[in-house]
Length: 361
Image (cartoon, rainbow, N blue to C red; front, side):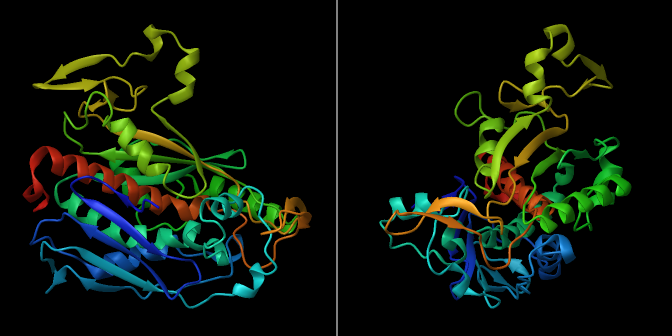
């Protein structure tokens, strides 16, 4: 099982949904970078369930930084963050049946039945809390260097938010929102779609749109470590993500080159783009423009509606109407996770290019 991502700055996840704790080890950070635990708490609060559109399992996430931070600053050694689990209900996962669309069957086959299946075990979205805690440290360090990452809900169940306009103003609007939308009226319509699905024992998915602002020219490699492939690798590591596109993405296939090419111009010695069809990336490398990426999040697979499946370990045909506490939609909770994974990737590439001490303010 591979649980580590990154080359210079690495993130390793550990734990299971219903185990004693989950956590992350963040390695490769230079010494002397300030760590604001209040900001970590704030970021974790954005991932937490929110009212009747989320699961009733609410973990308070009282994280503990076990190592790597002393006196409010990184020491240069691995940063270990542990988050205890408390609000579990393992009985809801007995008897065992593979939830359609979930990792249950694949995990059973890969790990020969020895996996911790309670709440999805290591495959659970619960582990994204550890990603967010580690990501908060990275996001704050990047902000000190003038690099910002932000995400809004572009769409849920066919209801669309407005697109980014003024990036700096929009990032300021989104920074404290647990349901991050730029048009609040559209956000309320999205919530109604979620409530409607929940009332029908069903779930809905959606699309996140993220931007990286302030990334300098030249980040990324032309082939296997392109900026797109690195960010996509990170985003596909988030449970429930099934699609990633940059700029206009798949819509580019229906355009002509004269439409899709981003015209360039020189403004006081700085080359700028007149459009962002390519998402701010040419040849796998940043060009100094905003990086834009959209992430498709599938509907939550665990639903109370009866579905055909197989029992485990017998593989006999059966039906399942899932019990327990589950989100009718996870899109809004995934936004801060996307921020964290993008930030980790960008920081890793920047440190690979500029050296570990570049992260110091």
